[in-house]
Image (tube, rainbow, N blue to C red; front, side, top):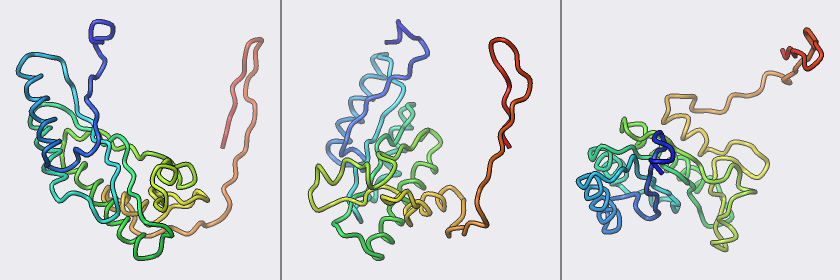
Length: 188
């Protein structure tokens, strides 16, 4: 891959390696060995398919130990599932869990990315794979932000409560200059 594209970033990505455990230690040993032998490796991906209330207490420590090897870390597929139906207590716990994961990544300089796996609860893979569980994303099935969204926002220094809309959003479009093969458009 590096021969084809020297700028390519090469990652090893796995699941159940978010906290310090036997599997993440084996991955750590592999990455250390690869680095020692000069094998190109740029990062480690932590899939982070988590269960409500079970964010590993060693999550940040684990990210840091990989970073200390000289590789970047990415949280590649974050979702936090819960037993259905959801309720206010579960949503509050999910908010705390999303906040903890986001804060752990933000605290480690080499944690370079956090990707949520699925945009809304309606398009998540969780319910079809774990019957009776779901509501795993920061947005509900109607595309409205759930408390988890605000947990992410808080961990990044943003707002802690929903901001009510002040009115409808409007857009105006006009065509600027035109020529044979194109035009410029103005959107306000």
